[in-house]
Image (tube, rainbow over all chains, first blue to last red; front, side, top):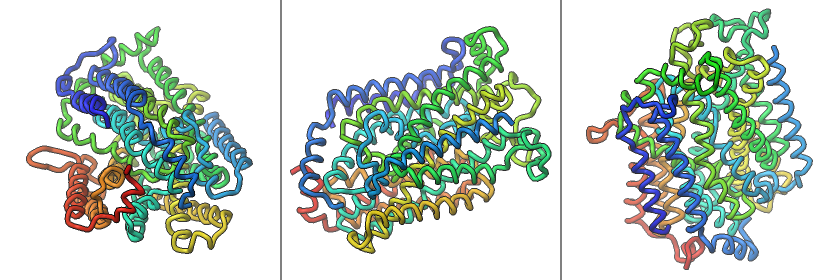
Length: 76
Length: 521
């Protein structure tokens, strides 16, 4: 896996452990507790990271390998 | 009564969908079990998402938020957004490629080949089946609870339907509701196979996502009592107590250890089978990217509804449903209760269909997967591949599906546990097996004895800790590692990983020819 992607995933995992909002009672937009809002943002950030992954880090040989070898005859 | 007819109509629609899918069935084993590898990006996204989002996601998350507060989202939803897609990216794409290359249909076929071991199948089969059954139970039990709550009062004259709680009395008893759901899922899986399952999953995923958002808005407007949705949301937000709007009562290390639980998707046999239905590797791109946001769309409203239910804005009459005569609020019933009491009969019926959709979209894949495993890994493997026709193999698959539905239903008749607790134990078992699949895909040094050690260590730790928790009776069971409170999955995962690495390092590695088959030269 490319190093930039590994770094991004590690950052996501570190940000996931949000000790800084643990006891914070702030309501974002006046209705959503900040602990929930923050983690919803983590979900969106995860999608952005995975978008980067499929654009820049997608394994190029996986499709051709599967097709090439299956045409030679598989087990089932 | 309106809710009852809407639910009945929805279930009939699903049966018709299954029958329609069966008309496209070519009669081959590959078509029945893997939809002939024809599933494109959108259907793959919807079927994978529908399969991973169960009663656990809707009914369980609302119930757990009711008990523990908003922290439940970080514990399982945002972590799943990161980890699930990681598993699809790292494991899903790779095993899809290997399976297409070597013709696998099940996980066990892959492990047998990769580890040069027939016996790994004997060891894994009962463990995987045994861990999927609690997962099935989550759905079957929740379906019964939802149907009873939503049809409460529909049959006041039937004595057998009467209960002591006004929130459930006169409703279809959970045993009967669960039975009907089992039969409906059985029918469309039986006739439609994987194609029917994928279509039904996609349809049901759209249903429960759309209706989930509608439910959220309707409940907010009803409970808030203000003029606009935003004003209602603000009123409800301000009413949430600090204990529920923060994680003040939640252990930080326990929260951290929850990160291991979503790794379970790497070892779910039913998800493995869904991966193999993909038309191409590129079909995985959309599920990998969209999965975290889809989780957010489903979980955020459910968690908010769960914490709203703890506020004084919920009317005192009728009272929240309880577990029997214990006086303890039945957290599993919070969502259906609010839907029933805070929405109209029509909308309530449709929203119930949405909840049932989420439940059934997981049950179907699990039933089909277990049937496929039995047919492929036991009957065909030991009976001989050429001994049975495709038609006979489809018959074995269907036969085992019927047997599993029977067993699951019988188990559901026992006293139901918390959906959330049952789910966490089931997922923990699969998570502890994750090192095995990861090593099989990426580590040349994994040996068959290392794999045996991982499986045995994992299941031994699971059984020991599950027993220590009173077989799930202690719903807040955690363990202490070095003075830190963590979920039991941390110990199971560590035991599995250490046993696998330790034993693999001192035993004979696989032959070069086997390694060349699975790793780039």
